[in-house]
Length: 394
Image (tube, helix red, strand yellow):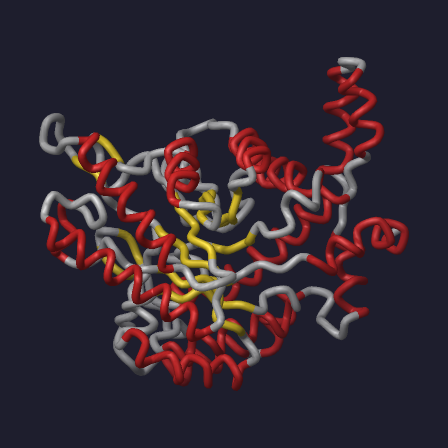
């Protein structure tokens, strides 16, 4: 049975890859404090080493997202060292993430700050990130802004929108050939009255205004409770503005739980929209954005990748011809049952067979436990103080 399933999903699995976040390997926490783990990475080399281990176990994580200021504190000057680490560990630099929320100067915003000198500083930093991406051969610059306000009347919302539009047009003009600008949105937190890029429609408008190489980044945790994310995905695909995902899960608000830990059916439905038209989704980037505060860093990362593969494989099993027939005849129960049949199929044996055919462990998580990598890292890294490489990317 697993061989039969594998024949159906193999082409899609062969194309599937997902990007890991450097910050997901570092000591992180909440706004109340950090929770150190002995095996956590505190240097960029350790982050590359951890990412390489995940890739060795899963075979589908060839790139590592980098957060400028945490991973490249010297900016462009750090690029040669990053390139050498990429060569040594066989992991390519992935999306480049500007940091426009951490410094005290950004208390009232970055690209939308009422102080023109701070807006200029933020733009200069983002432009430096574009140059870093060019030096490292990275395609995507992933932009998340904490910009917003907490009280009515404290900021001119329309004026801030004008600054934001102008800034994104300027950044788009600085892109090198082949690069993309991914614009992320978030309804609230840290701004609780208004957020300057609060939803997918605002992000889509800003991307369209900025230029053809600007797209929307969908963070699966950055939505109101019970929002229909797959409908947003369908709209962005229709508009040609879906650039990528930050995958995570959440129970109430915000994000950072491991993918599928709360609502795997939602992730499956998102993947169903994506595999429905492979040509429309060919350039959509899959990226992890999680903060593993209680789970072990490596275990959580491998678990996330395995979950993503499983849910993607289930979406590949969907009988689209039958579903289209049910939909055209408005057979509601039959259509839903068609969807559910794919979701409830156990694809784990087929995935194990797919991995073994590529010389990978059938169960990457078990291989991580039995291989002793985390224990070795804990012994070698655990004697140090808590790491200082930041831990939240938005």
